[in-house]
Image (tube, rainbow, N blue to C red; front, side, top):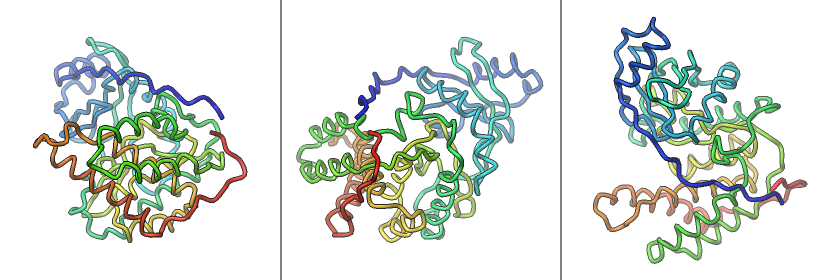
Amino acid sequence: MTAIPDLGPPPQRITVDAEQVHRLVSGQFPELADLPIEPVANGGWDNWTFHLGPDRLVRLPSAAEYASAVDKEHRWLPALAARLPLPIPTPLALGKPGANYPYPWSIYRWLDGEPARADRVTDPLRFALDLARFLAALQNIDAAGGPQPGLHNWFRGGTLRAYDKKVHDALAELDGHVDAELVREIWARALDAAWDGVDRWFHGDIAPGNLLLADGRLAAVIDFGTCGVGDPACDLTIAWTFLTADCRQAFRQRLRVDDATWARGRGWALWKTLASCPHPFDDPGNAKEFANAQRILGEIVSEWTSGAVTDPVPSVSRRF
């Protein structure tokens, strides 16, 4: 077994404003200097995002750890885009540090659409199948030379054991709010579910905010900052965080996910939900977010206890 990766301390984020972005753009791309610049609403955490005129955006990492994904995106996204059934961001220009901003940054073409939300999806089953089709196409792209799990993507595509302490710490905080013993059992099963060791492409953060809708249908997939090659189980998180039980099964069948991979995917969903669970839980300002975390945990536990879960299928080889 290889050493468990060290996630390190939380990133120290910096702020960026429109005037600073204007100085960067006008100084390095003077032909774009007259375009208006406005912040994108809910533009993300890893990057600050700004509209640049009507059909471009500027994407600036908010911390040094996130900046490590910039070169990766410029290297790989154009190659991936040609092989995928839905549009993804492809970079137009690479910016350099300047105007008191310390990291490389990017200009992209703007992709139209609105972030996925349950009440915006017109046909949930079709959404699940379209997403599975996209992920199947991504996994089938040649992974040779692709970026292995590392700090550039917080070890997505690697071992879940990197998050073991965080899961147990979160469960200790949640004592009395969830069935911690049952959740630990689900987590332990995920840790023990073996990966076959075959590198496949993954997105790394398949979440509603990164799935764009047009007329209620899945229209684009954005934010590939955590992409890489390795174990694609991390891309299954959406099955529990967003899909209904029926759509979850259709999604799994379309992707032909074996029991071991499904168990690891459930583990990724469990970690992400616990990691995003707000504290203190009784703060009225956290009520909506906490209720959503409880809903997702309920989906995970309900599937586990319903008898639909089988033991992970052993694999011939195991990397972690």
